[in-house]
Image (tube, rainbow, N blue to C red; front, side, top):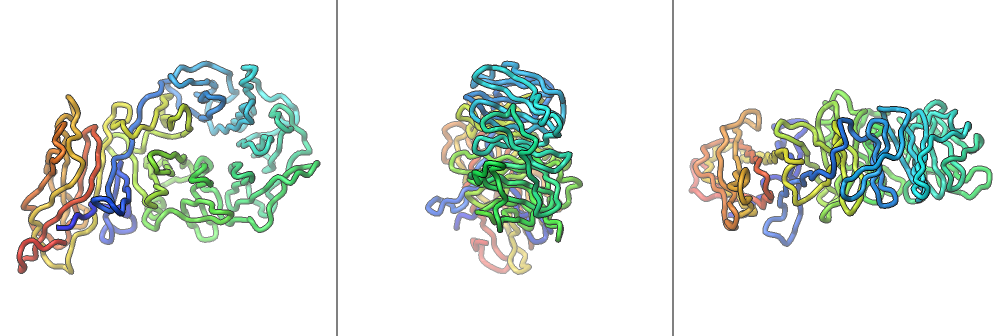
Length: 478
């Protein structure tokens, strides 16, 4: 019998009668020369870097070999061992925080004030230049020696003096003027300044003009808006974000290619997102690990997290715990050779580790729902299902020493399910272990679901499914 993929991605969306495939805490990896073209790997776990109190981080920024974070109103530097050192205090204790650096100065804005930490002098100050204090600085980026902020009160953007975030000139400003569109966020990428509006995007570049060194690039107006301020992130050598097109109401994940918006969400994923009561609070980050670059976006109100893999071009879902809640991670920053993420509700910071199989000790429940198995309405007898996975992954002791795979099936397209049937995945050294489920009954339309909760390595290579028509000989594969 041929080895079949259990599933290839999360495609469930508009109707389960059409497609039921779903991956939660599993992602597909393609290998044309492998045993199976599509294998499913468990998503990485979270290892604790440090616990810094009850309040979630408002920003993460790597600077001068240290990781900087704002917990409530306090700026801390954190070293590779997780030891934190207080550096200063902001004038706000909640809300969106943005950061950028020029190699010497770290600038932070919180919508009310701006702050500079100088790593060479180890001094933290609130920016006191009166030309800056008149602003409501909502976000900051850095480009070619200039700090750039946009003022939420006037919808203009301002630049600092060259290489100095403490000095500002009231005449050094401009506005995104091609459309009367409020700026929501901004980012510097590949030498260009991207002004992200609610309905449109403008791209500016440095000109060298002595009066004001930036000008809008002609022909780069993009008729997409930023649907969520915190969804803007560097992604796959470009920028990615949750985009909204107000002309037709489209809500899509967008990646910029050159100066063109490229959709990378799917009809099914978008249909699910549109059921969420609020998407404006979405927060996204991107990270690379073991040859994959992931775009991870969480919807706090809906309590859901989705991830896109630029390698396979497939989506999967991520969840912490066993009840399908959103993933623990919120903000991301690469530091110390690790991918560091913040906890969305506490002051904990974690390392994303492919060799970690819990989220800081909490269970990661992996779930795979396969495709419809049918044959033109014929009633099929499911003789057996055999799962091919990496065996012998059991732990020395405790939960996971005898890891189990749990199978359920549905005969009505995924609306109701059978009881779980457990099979062993293999204790330490049982590398040839396979799980087989015989005599699984009959159905005209069958969907299988596999789940794993034990804290072990999870690699599902494929399945051998033997079915037979009621009028045909056994052994015919579907």
